[in-house]
Amino acid sequence: MRLKRDAKMRLKRDAKMRLKRDAKMRLKRDAKMRLKRDAKMRLKRDAKMRLKRDAKMRLKRDAKMRLKREAKDRV
Image 1 (cartoon, rainbow, N blue to C red):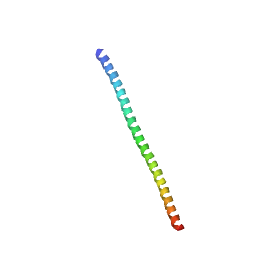
Image 2: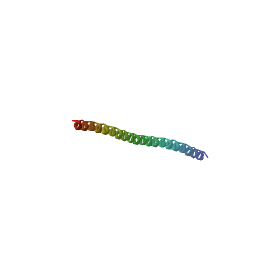
Image 3: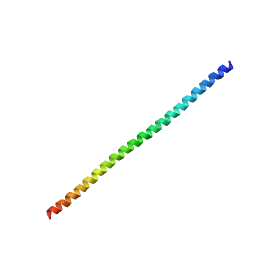
Image 4: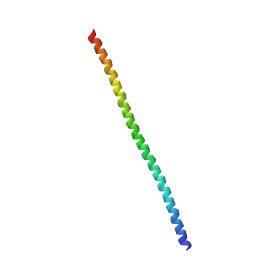
């Protein structure tokens, strides 16, 4: 009888431990996924910002060139 009870207790304890371990693993995995997603988002945002900046620079350069050309034409 005692052996049976001990075995039952052991099973219960093992099940609890397994649940705890699984929960920890799930938390770890979720954190990793969140990090990955955040990194992807950051990359996307940076790429967008770079495109915007490049477009602005291009516009500025084109405007300068146009002014130069118009100045030449006037002379």
